[in-house]
Amino acid sequence: MKKLISIAAALTTAVSSSALSAGAMFENIPSTRIWEEEFEMFDAMDSGALITDINGDGSFTIADCYALYCYTEGCETDEAATSDADKIADYDGSKSVDYYDTVHLIRYFILKNGLTREVTKPSYYSNSTKQSSAKADNGGLVSAYSYDLNPGKGFVSLVLGECGHLQAGYPIFCEMLESKEIDYDINGDGKLFFDDINYLWVYCINNTNCAYMDFTMAEAAQIPGEMYYPCQKLENGLRRDMGCCWVYEYALMYCFEKYELKQEYLTNDYYEDIFAGSGKYDFGKYAKQCYEEWLPKNEYLTFNGALFNREYIRFINEKADDPMYIPDTNGDGILNIYDTFNTYIYMDDLYSEADAGSTILPDDVWKYFTERCDLNGNGLCGDLHDLSMLNLFILDKLEDEDCIEMYDNYSDKLKAYIGRLSNNSGRPAVKYSPEKYSSPVALSDDLERTGDSNADGKKDMADVVFIMQSLANPDKYKLSAIGRFNADINNTGDGITLMDAQAMQERLLGLA
Image (cartoon, rainbow, N blue to C red; front, side):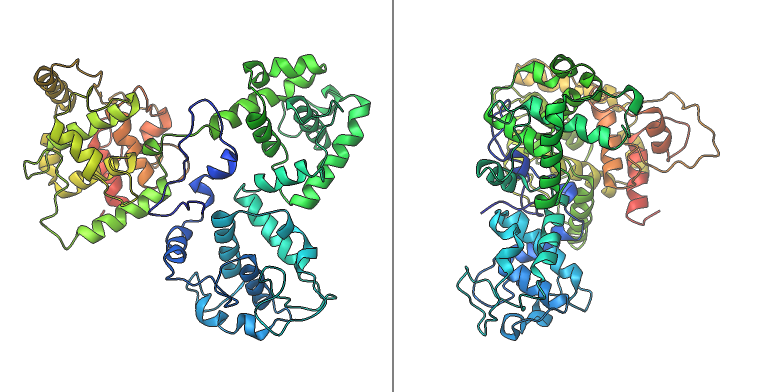
């Protein structure tokens, strides 16, 4: 069963650092494509707290999604298949079972099971004989309508739309390619290869009058004439049968899996050599971006701002009634500057892939992070979310004057601590010397300082974490000029300090 991205699960798949696993594009669906309310909703579906077996046949299949679709869209339904829908299918808590509940159920099904080409064909749902039972011969699928009404078309359109939103249609693409239902061999050499995708890329950009490119149609490159019709036929077929816009990405994923990847395939010059003018369409650059995005990520260093925000708020709410709870890194019974030092050193160890034999941290501190520091309960001890939560928790517990004292000359104190640990362990000190950004930003004081430190247009816990990361490791996390301006919300004008992180945290939690 595919692992869901929920509060208790990770999205990434541990594979080779240089090769893409089969279906990596689907396996590594980014958590940003999951709607915020779905994290807990899908957790509840996983646990059985929310029921997904709409037709009551004892299993969760596409038939349940289809039955709920027919019910919420007012199609003619088999009453036995949807008799309990009103009682069990209000997934979003809106007090009514409606279209949005159907969408959530479809999205959960796609993430949990994936899709096959068979269930994305309207004919799969087109039985002319109405069934009186919740079970049918075609894998439990309920015939819930007459053939003339044919709601299967609408249902398939919805399924493909959500499949596109989740960027999860790669398995279907492979089925269609291998069955020769689609022909992506544009140049006729007997295989789908990178140059075929480039032909389609140029064809589609030209069809949009070179929108978003830095040249006009008068300057556009024209693909060879014999490639034009195959491109036209392929684009029309993919968009009709898959209902999505990932016509290049799925093909790239296929090529990354099937062929030995040469660096030249990820350059614009390679495609310019195939036919004149195509290099300026930046397909090589885009192929490189996709490859780097789909490479497996270190799940311990994966960070999602929206998910972290929910995790941290839930964490402090759960610990609010437990004044004795102390996520203590060194066992001294108190939270203080040394816990933050240990956290920052361990974070650097994660990035440098240090282990128990190479870290300068004492054995008991290392064991805390690797064995007991699962603050968000996702099964990973000492991941980036845990470390960020620990630092925020310390800031939350300390009085303002204690925070000021703690972070006065913080860098010098950290360097001294690192030197002491290095001497005690007999291992070289890590290069870890966070420095404060103190230079003022030349922006008008009339502008609002929003706290948006990562300058992504949103204000969430990711901004708090980014401030701390920029202080802890400025070589890896560089605040832009606008980011520094936005982040300087505490004692404006004194540069970026962890007091700004605390102030931003208080804003987000409604404490300021």
